[in-house]
Every structure is written in structure tokens, then in C-alpha cells.
Image (cartoon, rainbow over the protein chains, first blue to last red):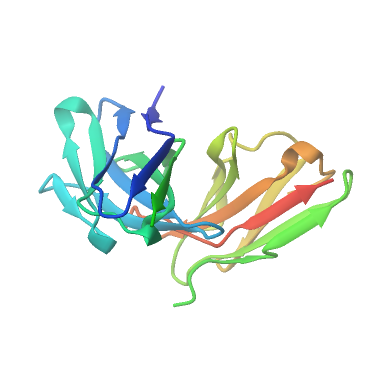
Amino acid sequence: AQSVSQHNHHVILSEAASLELGCNYSYGGTVNLFWYVQYPGQHLQLLLKYFSGDPLVKGIKGFEAEFIKSKFSFNLRKPSVQWSDTAEYFCAVSPSGTYKYIFGTGTRLKVLA
Amino acid sequence: DAGVIQSPRHEVTEMGQEVTLRCKPISGHNSLFWYRQTMMRGLELLIYFNNNVPIDDSGMPEDRFSAKMPNASFSTLKIQPSEPRDSAVYFCASTSSGTDTQYFGPGTRLTVL
């Protein structure tokens, strides 16, 4: 069955620290990949997405993610986090040509000021 | 663009009562999704509509749940009768064919006492 794993459930960092959140998926075919962010009490917002082309994708607010096909991974990175990055981050995978998103369980990031 | 609109934002009801959640997708989008988010199960797809037609309702938990999309600009998710285990945040999302990116509404936080 298709699945998405986010191994870090809770991450606590100090401001200016670097961030990397892991995302691995299980699906043998072509996929579209997404990272969404959910700030406290708010809805999910798209951070970045990968459909094809350059596997290093840049998104909003200084976030980027790298698609490594051989590892079935799409890790999210930010070189220097801010307090305002405190949120929950969701990785999602959608088999190309389908409507279905498969979400990971999310990673709660807390950034200490 | 107003984005996906959901109402109400919060709903508190007693067990056994009927609950109706509403969603207005982004104008021009022809696909609509209802999700449920809980701490235990994360984000689950309940039902997917394309061009107002339910395509996949395999995620609907049981017969107490029903969803309709009478036109391209409105959808409802109904729970009758409601139970405490239905307490969750319910999100609506929409997309248009060819974009493969879902845009989420602010969600309805449902509490069933």
C-alpha cells in the first residue's frame, strides 16, 4: 500500500538553527510531492511542490526540498529557522495523474526564541 | 481570490444531533475534497468530488456520514447522528484539473459532547 513516513514527530530548535525534516514514501511509479505547513489554528498552506525537473525545489519563506528518487525521499530544509516557523509540517505524495494525496502524519516544529 | 471558504469555523454539539459542514471551493476549481484531521489518525481523505460527482467515498467512516455537491460552488458534509468520536477538524480542499495542487480551507473544528 502507498504510504508516507515522516520520522520526526516533534522537533525543537533554537532560532538560527538549521532544519531538515525527513519524508519517505512508498510508491513505485511517478509521483508529485508536496510540503504543506499548518500554523497554529490555521489551515494547511502549500510550502513547495515538485512535479518534475530540477530535484531541488525552492518554496516560500526560505524553505527548500530535495527529491532523491533512489531513496524515495523528499526532505524539507531551511538553513536558519525563525520563531515564526513554529508550525506543523506535512509531506504529501500524489501518484501522477491521480487526485489522491497521501499525507504523512506531520512533524511539529517548535522554534525557541 | 477568497480561497476555499468553510463554515462554521467551530461547531459544538451534543451526541445524537445532526451536524452540517459547508464548503465553497475556489471559483473555477472542479475537484473538491473533504478531509478529517485528528491527533490519532492525522489527515484522512473522506470523499472526493469531480465536476460535482462523488468519485471516491471509500474514506467515509460509516453511514452516518454523507456528502453532497449540488453545484460547482457548494458542498456539504453531514453527520447524522453525531458521536463524540467524530470530534475533529474537517477540512475542505479544491483543485482544478491539470494543476494537481490542492488548496485548503480554514477548517471546521467539530466538538461532539
